[in-house]
Image (cartoon, rainbow, N blue to C red; front, side, top):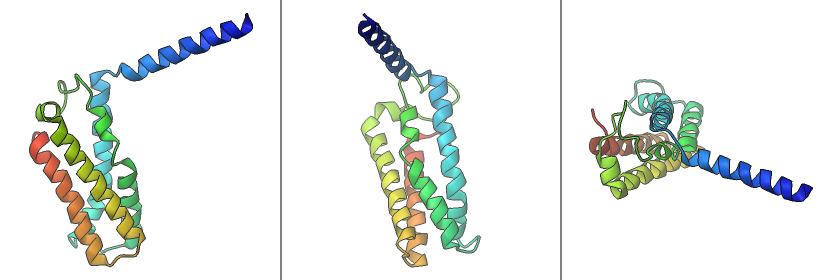
Length: 150
């Protein structure tokens, strides 16, 4: 009897927790993805400034920001759930109507961020790192051009 009770309780908890994961409020999804985009911005700011010569190139700082960016590169896309196209968002309807294109742009960004992190860790020449920072920025712009209000 105790085993059956434990199994019932465990099953109920699993069912409830699974339901909680599925039942994301659109407002929460919007806030989540916007927060992750702020992390992108926090890390791209110094990287972009280094790439454009607005601040001295610092490999240690570049590595820190590149790694942090790479670590979160796949995170915001989880927040583009059904119903999160309404509310306080700059996302265009094309995020949902052109999902394949949107996911392709997200993948391009993830790859660009991963390449940047690898370059910095591999002791690549500064010029290569600067160019890859530009590629990461271009991948951001490509998505914004098609899927975000300005």
